[in-house]
Image 1 (spheres, rainbow over the protein chains, first blue to last red):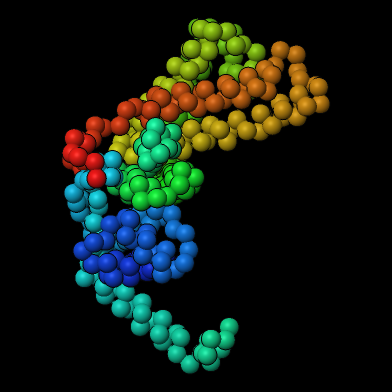
Image 2 (image 1 turned 120 degrees about the vertical axis):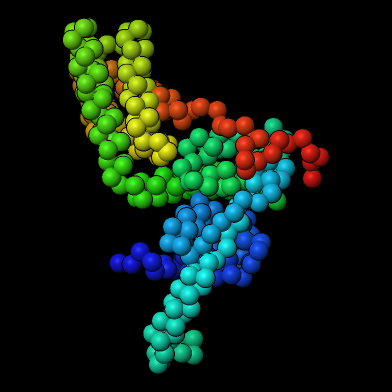
Length: 111
Length: 209
């Protein structure tokens, strides 16, 4: 079971997309980037659920942006990765690389 | 409705039943994606997933609160129905035992709806600021509770063995749905959304893009 301050698989994907998007990270580009990079259909409700968990863990902060007419007058909510979130991503990367290292079954594209 | 408007019913469902603390931003994101060429079917799928995921996320994050909300609703329902029985003896708790429903009188139906609305109102009042998911989970518990008797009644009707005086299945289903709707009305879930001039929105007086 995941410890409360660890990153889940989908949460990790969301944080990586947030880092990639920088200052333009709100719901629509986050979903589009996730869909483009994973090739899966992503439900915006799942993305927000992950973002709320990440915010609860202190890995992400959010702020309200400008409302626009094409959004029915509703404001965008921008998300940013915190320093703590970045540390956790680096730690997860280190952990995964250590686990990957030396697995001959996963080298050369063979399952 | 123009072809560029999101499906109104779907939007209404998300506005009233979406439990995410970021619901206004979610609606804005869905509208923006819809306006960039997504279909009405896609919009509906997103709404269903968003409502279900946000409800379960809130319940999971507030398990104790959800338990208290369901218990509160059922206890109040039990107390009020007993109280009604005291004054109006023939109102046996048919809403708790749907298979014995025998009393579809107009004013009694109104009284029943008022009772359910009261339970929804009390759950909402005692569970702020998380009243929306808590009222929804209480209403869901009522549907779950009603499902087995409805199943038994439908089987009996299918076999042609409906007990004398019992509701026909369509009326029993209507009763459960209307009582569930009463809970939601009492819980304030059908209240009009805040005007668009709130903190995170603007009035749409600007030129369309």
